[in-house]
Image (tube, rainbow, N blue to C red; front, side, top):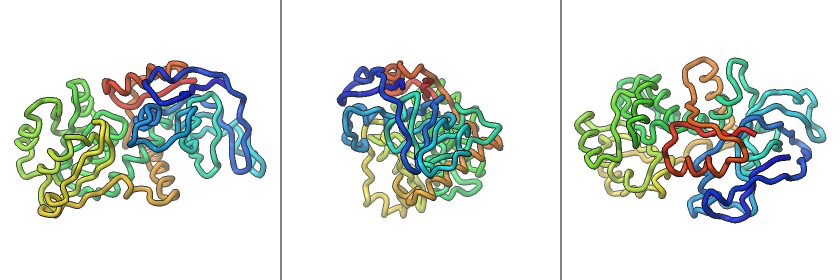
Length: 321
């Protein structure tokens, strides 16, 4: 099979194409003939050997999400799975390949109205966004701010919050991304690369925010914390700014702010599975749509990682074997 591997941690150019033996599924596994590979910001952290990334053993074939058709099943697996169109996690790694193994417990059948690229784009980001939205408990009329609002997770959160009747403020780092957030339903848009972004956001929502979804972290976190109204919720789910933001417990306690970490969603495998199913169903119904920013051939995974790292892409980046 064709694959992309990193022999050691490093910059995007440590990723290179390789030919590996075709994998054989074991008990409880299937093999997917991969048509679409999802990339995530976490993939780039793993590749770089970042201390905030999940641990990985090198050499490693990155990738934890693929879409395609099942071409082989392992011992004891119902052969009726063969030919099924699915999206699935791969156990953390092994996704950047033309063939990938997955457990039957991780398989999601793709609803007929959805294409594989859209379904694959929703696999991780849709699950995360649906879980975060559920944990936040948004009610109609509440004010919500979403950082990285044109990214894979953020763009779905904008749509989910709007569908809940919220007044949505979208934060992003370029005018193109802010324009895209408006097309998804954002009521207020602010460029957080501007020096006065907090002043502008406070002016737009003088009573403060009911809910903040923070996927950027770093220095954005303490600034956002001051904008939450008493009794609000702060949902921390990413570190796109390079590090997790530090939450001052005194400030949070003084304003009775509920801090909801990423670990609070999907506390069981069944819950995570149900969030993905929900995201696929919502997309099939037309309630949400993923934003696919760019696609790259599988062998150009290094270029894809460089583009993700530059934070210039709107939405999801996919690889096509």
